[in-house]
Image (cartoon, rainbow, N blue to C red; front, side, top):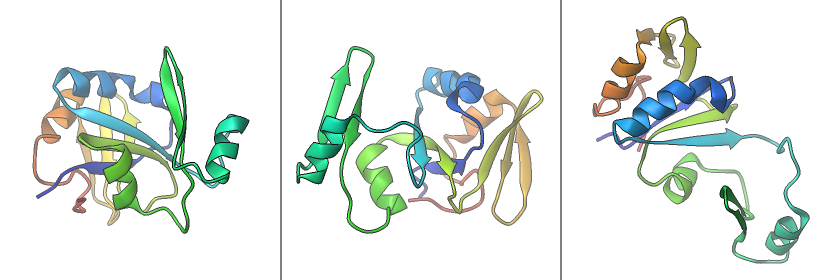
Length: 143
């Protein structure tokens, strides 16, 4: 049974605001993942230093959110990342070079492209309704 959909996106979070708000209103949790070689902005030096020195996690918290740093050994593993950071998310939008289906904004809705080339168009309401389906949006099971 499907637990989540992981879809690659090319644009920033602001372009997906309508979908994020509609999914939240329908009770679905959505995550945002940036799978990159390097971050666009450097990490706070104290967090990076603590993680490098062996802290399990280094976390900074503000009134508006938090950022956490955890060092890994070896390459990132999708299932491990999802389990650790996106528990309960039904949809994860990811920027970066991942071999997963793709979600693209189009006039009046969304295009979901499977790895095999199949494309489907959805309105925001249709896409949110599909999040309840056990069938994956882009044709590949995620678990």
